[in-house]
Image 1 (cartoon, rainbow, N blue to C red):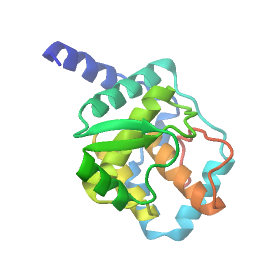
Image 2: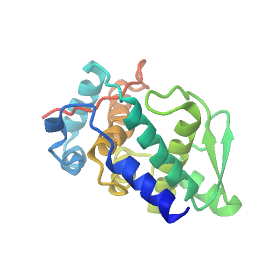
Image 3: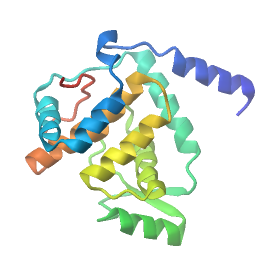
Length: 194
């Protein structure tokens, strides 16, 4: 990538407008990670919040900038990616061992009906997130998801992106644990309970 391309990408990412009230993003997302780690009650509140909230939408500029950021991160993955039907791994340790042996991360194409990204970019997003589980040694437990998502958030200072990641990874995981299954409706929830 040329310096000009990098500058354009940085400007695109930095100029991303917030689609929700600026006040919503004054609190750092890392505060919510701490609460979610230390309180099962807060995890339940997150699940109920996700299930009961009306979904948000991103404006076109924010969606394009977030997609570009995901694309750039995907290009930096340290191994090849193969897209497969079905769930290729039962555990994070199985995934890590397979990638260690083959150099290829398998990503499921199942249930690829995203609300933020295109289906293609959503698969990139899945690969990035799973690579964080591998590189960080985090399992698929609640704590492992929190750690992998927190790492993902640490790659940018864009608070809108933090909220997108938190919604896509943590709020959905909380709803899954609360219901015992994935929610019927996948949505983007940028707000958080206080």
